[in-house]
Image (cartoon, rainbow, N blue to C red; front, side, top):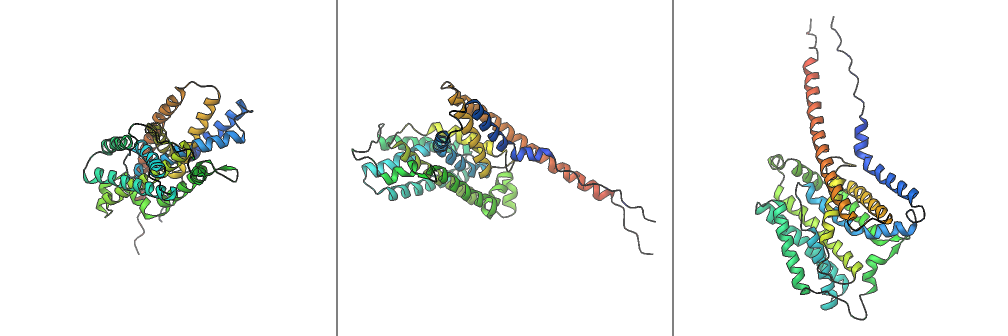
Length: 353
């Protein structure tokens, strides 16, 4: 008589998974609730929400742009410099060269994609670490910004900029600022690309194990260059919105957006899809940062509170991202050991009589 194998119940889904997936989203809701209760007359108002959505649209776009190369295991430190160059170039083409604003915007978008692709070529074919390479190209972009502006500002004439151009930032749709819908549109496209198309799956494989990606036939260099090009395209779009917001060409603008962008992208990799960069997670992370900064600002925080908040959150984001990655590796190893132990413990089948 054959002894039946011992019954093994399926392991329950750990609560830690839900916390890792939706914990940051819950934190955003709790922060909004706390600040609303503490500041009922100013924080939960429509004007404040509209202000948050408007002011955080450009950092959100940069964070989404940073997410793309991070998915492939690379970092683009030229984001802030690229943003400054893009918005100055838009103003130069419209104000000093007399280009129609739609054509100027298209040219800047194309230029952003080309600049991003050049970053990718330098990193992949020059075999230079992405930190060093993009820091160098960012310095070149900053030099180009100074060359265009000659160290001054680009100021429109008495008639100002076309209203249809400034409306890219000032206009409202359904009572909310148009830039917020622009961020949602970019996030939706990025979600589809990363989560539903082969391009995104290839980037994640390259980011987790580039050698294995090359072995299975993924052209790692080509996809990394495309990731940088996509990032540059998003940065160019953010530069267009910045020009519509500032309405002048300021060569010193751009660098202050770099840290919030990486905070959003890295913190976003700890939620929704814990352990990997993702568009929805980046949006949630930006929401946490936006609510936190708006709340402490209304409490009368000093000027140094913003960099303190961003820097501390960046350290927490990097720590959480590393912990999540290590936890996934431990979980995979444990599952593999259990599978092997279960297979070895299974009783042999009865031989035919």
